[in-house]
Amino acid sequence: DGWRFAQRGWGKEMLGTSSLDSLPAVIPGSVHLDLQRNGVIPDPHFRMNEIGVQWVDAVDWIYETEFNWTPDPTLPRRVLSFKGLDTIAEVFLNDELLARSDNMFLPLEVDVTDRLLTGENRLRIEFASAERVGQERQRAYFDENGITEPIVRFEPRSFVRKMQCAYGWAWGPVLRSCGIWQPIQLVEFAGRISKMTPRITWNDDGSAAVELEARIEGSGTLEGELTLLGFPDAPRAHAEEGVIHVMSPVLWQPLGWGEQARYRLTVRLVGDSRQTLDE
Image 1 (cartoon, rainbow, N blue to C red):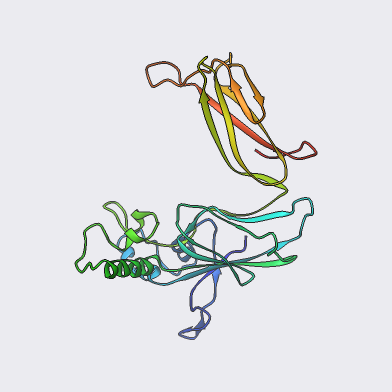
Image 2 (cartoon, rainbow, N blue to C red):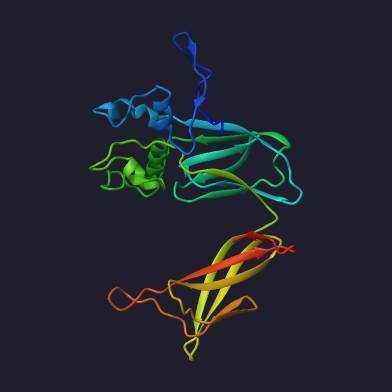
């Protein structure tokens, strides 16, 4: 909560006789929505307003907030989880550079176990203009490879891992935008499952073995369970040393060939107190 945003340079310049300061922001969201809420720009989708707001994508934007934190000795591990940053961003915690993000589609996690301060912490995210960075990357690539003529479908958008329709489409406006488009969470834990991959091996007798390949952060042991959805007579299954053995498994069938059998694999990380830490 309590997010604010500003164009880089606000607070140092004067517009008429008024000083420019940060404005309230809504997270998740985007810079165009925040500017519209604060009355800085009109609705970009109305009539020809799209043309009048192109300056938004030519400059850099900064989002920041403060939050209070108190350590919990039962949860000794802490990570900041950014579900979606759009797009070219640097993340600062208490004015220390934590990480750089360069992909709108991938989440970002940063271990802050030893970086959080008891009491108030300041989180700041600085977004660079995707259009400017894309042009710089295109120019560098063309120079490196001796390309002198424009190439169709190889515009600056091709050099930024960002939603491509933001650069304009037959049905959409040119609003590249930036911002925190997915939630941000501070995750504290004693142990958790950070990655899990099931691997299936078929046996000659028609049974199957589901082996769990999991990455554990912190403490705890794994327990697994396989259930068959929508079938009253589920196949027999038993777990043994991290492998779930399924006798006479029901197979998924294409449309028109039979019912589609769906399995649910549930994996728990259990601590010494038998409390489920993650699922």
